[in-house]
Image 1 (tube, rainbow, N blue to C red):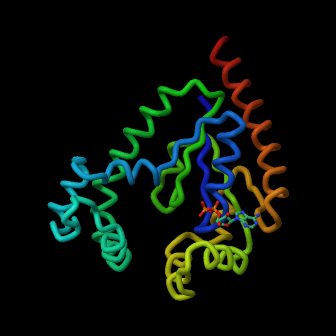
Image 2: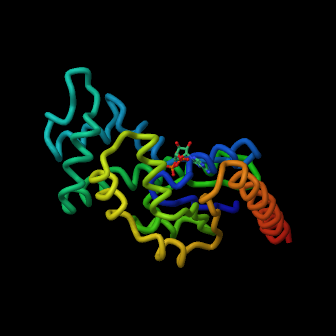
Image 3: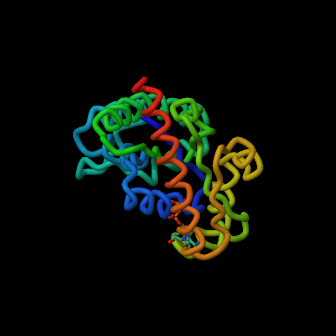
Length: 205
Ligand code: ADP
């Protein structure tokens, strides 16, 4: 099956693009959603997180304090690597299982830190949603209420716009309005259907 990795910086428009591709018939698998499911109360990954980072990360309701965990790994690359060691193999397993179960013409894996975590090796093509940093910051500000300092820290922890663009196979320009983005999504969807068709023809031979 044709597998597309959808990535882009925070607030670039990944969810907007993923929703539109899903509405067109692609199978969309979102690693953030999987990560949240894996850390629901009672899940083995959550127990391992508590054993590794301390039970005080779990509230009295059994729920993970996501803000505290994020703060911990943000300032400590060793802790971040350990967290990734717990979550990534499980995310990959679940992703592959969902991929195997889908009968959509192609699949889209939404992976915000695709390059940063070397997950581009899992996909056939990388689709990047792009926009200028000033516009990106403005959209994040409007959506999240994060401070400029917090936005700076997040943006600078991700690879640069230039590097992301250099490593993309396909690029969607989200610097303009939503209709302009959705028109491009329609085009890329047709491209992926054609590529998926080509792959199926080869497999039939
Ligand atoms: P991501 O998933 O990459 O963080 P989203 O798809 O959630 O990005 O988009 C970030 C924010 O910007 C959301 O509030 C979304 O509604 C808004 N947005 C996305 N595309 C556009 C656009 N072309 N014009 C204006 N706002 C947009």
